[in-house]
Image 1: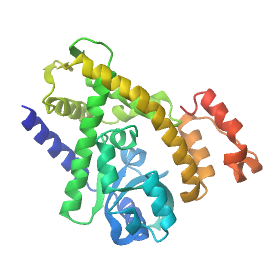
Image 2: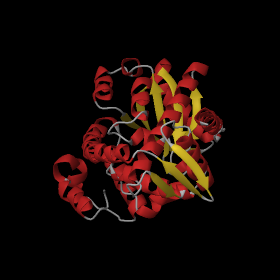
Image 3: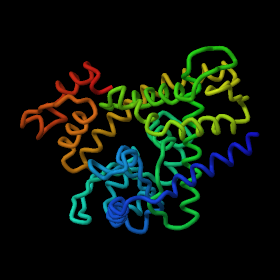
Length: 319
């Protein structure tokens, strides 16, 4: 029954979000929270460090705030966040004799909710259909709202991914792995990311049983669908016209999402300390290709580094 599946999915995600994190992650979350004071409602930890279970590299967080005006002392930063969310920042702190590094995105609860429900910007729902942790929340109500947003993001992701599977028949038969592998490649392709295909596929490979269960429960909890389990596969009956419509909407949204990513990169130059070095490190880490810039290109990348950026796009290092 849809209600039972929805309740089971919510319980699964709630337990996952409650899982304790390492002390280093909590220390970094505290350092981030201190930057934005009482405006912070919750902090979410996600990404590659969570998957690996370590703190080497750069920790990834989402910071959920009541409002952008309350989160910043400078009105300019609040305006940037309101016009083109999220603002992305880089921070370092020391913990137990080690230097920790993190980047974090700031979203208002309202904007986070809206993007979890869909839209051209897939960053929220494509990330939070994956495992995450609520490292800190102000109170029970703040925590419950984040859980509801993560649940919504999961439904959004699975429904959209279903539309990307091949075939126009009313009934689709597929292994859950097909849904996730196709889905992650599509969503990562909507951003200017340097990840190779194998890296993207490793998102599913890290916890296949978890993703299989989430897909089955999310689909079964949708009253518009009829879902059967057949061996290791799922059989889902849905309206082919709705799936085709979802694909057309995504085709348009994908272009808009890339444009938003480009604008976000420009904006990050105003919020992210030494973003050029970080971007080069990120490209090399995920693509295996070392990118060299001249001193002039490093100093004025938005003016002089376009030949390098266009070459990376042409060679599919950035997609």
